[in-house]
Image (cartoon, rainbow, N blue to C red; front, side):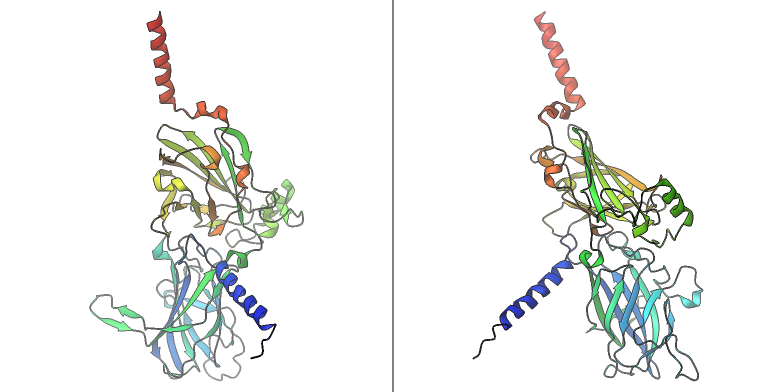
Length: 444
């Protein structure tokens, strides 16, 4: 047996490449989160089939915001899309060979987008027409689904002749998702509205798409700053958290701000993200500030503020995830929705915060209204509770599913020795004063 000296290093390199690529798409706070795309063939036609495509977002706190999802794939043969309901192909392509009816799309690599709200009823199906906006599963499972129907021609008319589409891509709305190849699965079973009859798809295949923050952006998209009542020092976001300052790609002067706001370049779709961000030391479009506000005998209080530094972008249906050891004893949350996330049954230290519908579920572009705030009350666990060594601050913060840049642990606001007296609650202090006063009276 002849040993190839190059084979082993190449094999190891391939192995680690696979491991790294899988690790990039793994989120320890949402280990099973993904977007599943399901194709259900519901009927055969003269030259193909009619299918319902359902996209379900099983991610607990990462949603698809404006301008919505874009789905693409490659046909395995010479298929065409005769018609679509609930979505549309962005390009028709070259359909010159068709003399009679002209297909909706003849491209070998079609790109499909959702229809906007308010389209005529004959162009709609269930769970369509939301402009591509899909909620996260943890925030609203009923809105975490998007569907459309398409009629495919020149594809084969049986389970043996139909070839599965290839090379699926998903933008949600930007980069970050990697999709698997389509895989045939057991046919979906449907229940009629009256619940008395079951039908099933003629053929079903699934595609699974997972998210990687590294693929989505070279830099983080948010950062965290900190402060506390027991220390006058404010710990800012780390310098260059989201890339270093470049005067050509950020806004620094009032004149530039007025120019950008005056142009009003699509605040709902995001506009030009790079050129619309305010010049800061951290250069992040989003900053989360965690402030330890008050201390009570059995509780403590935190104020969270999320600030938008982008002058051309609203964040719709935003989510904020915090990992903190005391979230298992959270008592009250003001002005935000809250849901505990328990990816591991034995650990309950992660929670998702989100805006209340019609109140603060839209984080507006930078300016006077470009922030949302909430306060939390947490019950102390006397066996483990302490303000020392940064315990009062979160381990991780995520905004819209992306992990934020945290300050270095040695920069957290520390508890000075002189702060012990400040941590005594007002009721305890009053009791001590009464005791001292009583002792003085007895000594007279």
